[in-house]
Length: 294
Ligand code: NAD
Ligand code: KPL
Image 1: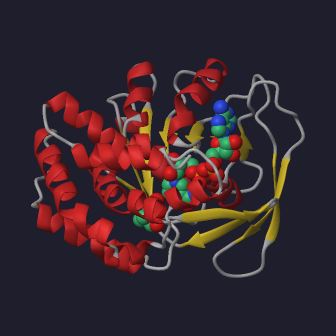
Image 2: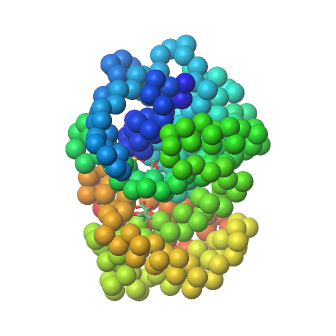
């Protein structure tokens, strides 16, 4: 049995694609016991209905996928983990950085892994989950206890028929995604535009080079492969062009009145700058601008 904590878009994508009967959502304390029912629209083919039971007391999952938003993850795990065996691998799917380290530091004895995924899922209306973008998922260990489990966990996730790869350097991969999200998401939220349109906007053009300089210093300070600010800008803009018509996850959160993950993207980079004595005024400014939108 694979348990999924966070029955939102990404959790429902995994629940719909993993073999039926082998998945359960982890309930919030006191949550109604009726199974979760929804329609699922795959990338190709007809939509179908999915029914996922809630994990029962005493049931011990062999794997726990955590698909809450970054800001909810620690509290969600604090409530869920007391009834889950300490040997069960925990796989964290959150965007950005910061929440993963909090979890690994809070439960150092448990096997903690992280996943970075470019799959896309959303819920355009109540009761419907759409697999909106075909991507791939990389999974790797965040602590030594998780290390020997990486291949097995990747195989279990691959039973979904989604593309899954074991990753030796998951932190590096999370950093790569963080750089892209730091250079796109906040701009799209502040400017209220699709990803590609930021490139033409004076606010983006004013701040992207100083932002990339900050990120370049931070990468060097934390021992990640060094990149020039120009190379960072190029990779950010390649993704902005490739996803030109997309609404970023952060803009979508703002438009829906949900909390954003800014504290784990530009906010994380600003905090890291303070720790390493690196000035990060642009990350700080973008963090504050997005916080003001909620
Ligand atoms: P979502 O808001 O749709 O889902 C999160 C779910 O967690 C919600 O159903 C919420 O009710 C639930 N939740 C919150 N607190 C909880 C608690 N204490 N106990 C149990 N459940 C709780 O978000 P999402 O789009 O599924 O994204 C989840 C994470 O995955 C985010 O960090 C996001 O950045 C990342 N991600 C999402 C996608 C995607 O396509 N949706 C792709 C890549 C990464
Ligand atoms: O990951 C994304 C997000 O929206 O969070 C990008 C790459 C910006 C695509 O929209």
